[in-house]
Length: 409
Image (cartoon, rainbow, N blue to C red; front, side, top):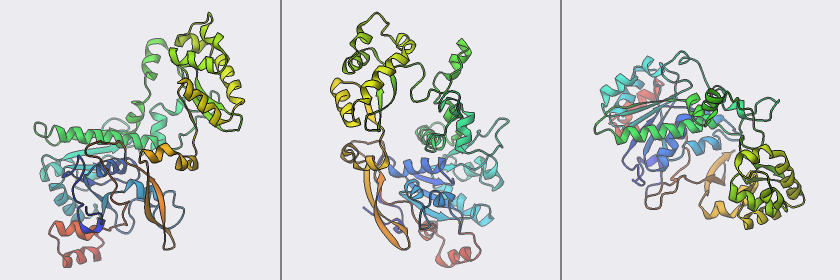
């Protein structure tokens, strides 16, 4: 297999072999979608601004000139530098679109249209092309022109009202959740657009960050609308389910325990030495457990506090009670299950000052048994494939030199 990213399209593999994707997005949402498609065999051409590139290249940059975050989200992609705001750049983008199956973009609504690359322009170049558009508030509605980031979408989508502890400011989740979920929905939309091309051509997929977050809030709004229930931050446990919380062990580490099911609740109470709470007169259904949350949490906390995390985990596993330690990055690296599942992939990568290192990167998800995805290379250098991609369009070396001199590529 060709694993040299500068040598043209990789040899085909995976369920998306033969699919070409043009990624026009920056930051996390559209690049997440492009990463997933690339990991399963799509030829993803990432368009970046000449001399600047995706700003993600400098996010969480501890050394060197390209972050490891970009190396993850850019893996298996080919980097093409192209100024889309220039007529020459627009023309090249349309030529690429003519041979492309999916275009991903996450600019503010109206940006592609301003550049002459809107849905009508792309459809004229390729009637069957699937256009996936990711934005903060969607392509329509009174908020469509507002700038947005994932953290704002988490607030507007209802999630931040549920995070943290009651009476304290809402907390941020430690990852770019809204953007990543939007990337997942973008992939789903792209695949549905491809599946229906024989009878519905030229699908436009409209993904709004706040809607992606809102879709995760379960019965937040129905419960309010039907019963007037206003959910508040749940702290370390899920609202309306007990016992299910985070508990501090005797060695200072933490463990998450889930006993919010009738059978597992009984097993949990017996292992913590409180069978009376499972077999007594109190209701064992969820509503009864929720009414007695404090008593149940106190019983579990007392038991856990007398044991190390390892000992508590072993006893709960033996009893068939769902549980798991809160792992740090160091503990994830050392965990044998991650390794056994192929979730640790070592790759040699430049990390600064001309120095390269073998670094662990996350493996590919999901796992397919017969035709799996894979990582062939990490996120490429800026413009690493410009010449290869343009030569595939028939743009020769002298013309590429002219375009470089003009700042188009």
